[in-house]
Length: 276
Ligand SMILES: [Zn+2]
Image 1 (cartoon, protein in one colour):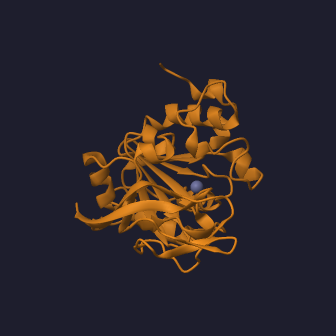
Image 2: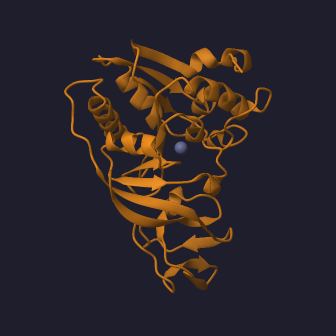
């Protein structure tokens, strides 16, 4: 199908912020899939006037409406409804339009912020040759592999040729934007698109996400737990009213604390050191 996204999403021109350079590699940088994450807009604003040696970048502010209202989403989480629907709710329409657009790009970089207490994390949904090549260009050592099964496979980067989400913590104020800008510039440098060519980073800590640790609504997590630090069976993980709860398994938690997903303590992962 040769879908013209403009037919389905009337604010398409607002969404495509700008395009710079021409030809290949063609990169899409997507910000504000979540409207309460101003970081994406800051990164895009900072990069939209850089001079490229080769290739092109197209910048997308994904959810302009949620951004205006400073809300994560209007009807449902945009990053859980891909590939979207032509006649769906607002998020489904945006997802549908973005899916068609993003197919055109060699690489899609998706910028996020989290309230969870960690500095940065690269997220991939597949770990094939394409992703391995891309990871080498990214100057972030911690990588989470979140396969389809964990969130249902409806996150945007499942629908890109080669995509990565970059998460920055520990807040959503936009304070982390300089770090994200530095990282994206480093990616562009190692692709030979910008400035002097930089080195690649082969050694990574790969956190393979196996699912999430479910807890009830009134669960209060132990604030001493730390992302990336192994939790052992019997370890104190939180309270329900005055009852202490202890871990039933061994795992490495990701997205703990204020950045945790609803009704979970954290994502459950296993760590591997890899050399790409
Ligand atoms: Zn986000």
